[in-house]
Amino acid sequence: MQRKIEHIDLALKQCLTLSNGLNDIQLIPNSLPKIANADHINIETKIGELCLSSPIIINAITGGVKEAYQINKDLSLIARKHNLAIAVGSQKAAIKDPVMQYTYSIVRENNPDGIVIANIGMDSTFDMAMQAVEMLRANAIQYHFNLPQELLMNEGDRTFQHMKEELSKILIHSPVPVILKEVGSGMSREFMKEMISMGAAIFDLGGKGGTNFAWIELQRQGIQDDTFVDWGLTLAESLIEYQRIRALHTDVHVIASGGIENGLEIVKCLALGASAVGIAGHFLRTYYLKSIEHLDQEVSKLHREFKIGMALIGANKVDEIKNIPFVLKHSLYTYAYQRKLF
Ligand code: FNR
Image (cartoon, rainbow, N blue to C red; front, side, top):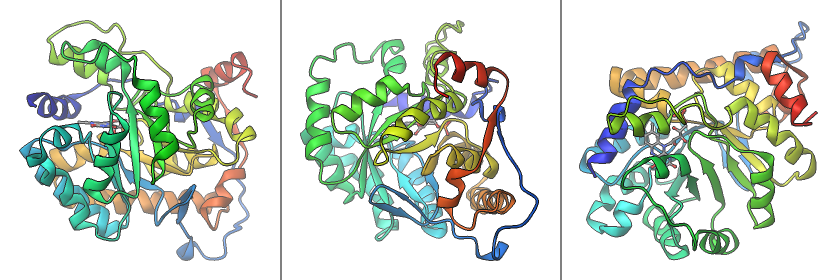
């Protein structure tokens, strides 16, 4: 499981300049204050039946190696302090070796009443998914898609013939909401449609522009080659893809993720219909390269920026962000036009 340590190490070193595209979304301002009181802005949100105190989710990072225990312990203390939902990293390691469960279950111990999200990958069966949920008494489960990473890893999965069948069972029979999650390649509307037809109702878009697993895997193998590093859709393009789905399926919800680092980006994602956002790399870097105190301050800063952004567009509560007018700039407009998404 040295791989998990190397992933963290390389995520900390990643210095790619790929953008998540959110700069090309321009919200339209209105100078007349429409909020009742800037100090009483309500940031509660809902993802289907999941009620969250904040739209910020600490996204899946780690578990399954002894070093992960301290990280999950500290991240989950931050989640408790700021009432954030928190996801753990892939639980496969603890399903294979129950001795490792403590590296994940600390998240639930620190958040007995909080929203804790389990995590499994594309090689998981329905039984594995249920073990992952039980391990944490999880409120929801993320099923992550990471095809570029698996194919670029020497030790990655190469066979997927039972995947769809097991995923279908998970989607239909899971006792908790299932979040279908990308980890950096984004999502097309065709993919979302296919998954909705199988029973999916929540997507974490995981767009390009943040943590980049193609880069991480190539670096890990010492390969100086950028092929596939630019693969996939940015977070902004994925949000554009979601607009068609949003118009047709009011019961389908998305979490926006991929390189989110400030509160205005969160407002933009919610204006394009997301119910919440996931942040992994930015939180990991703040915690690891600085300190847990810095992470604590960073979450406060994100909440402050988010509320300022809401005030600037006249939103008293999260639902009111969703109908804010916006304009797409530069290549994002061309993208939307070519994909006939507006
Ligand atoms: C991740 N991510 C991740 N996702 C997942 O579903 N299961 C996992 O085990 C992991 N492991 C993991 C390790 C490390 C070191 C990082 C940085 C990230 C992916 C993560 O949850 C998120 O989807 C992507 O990182 C994109 O978001 P950011 O990092 O750009 O905010």
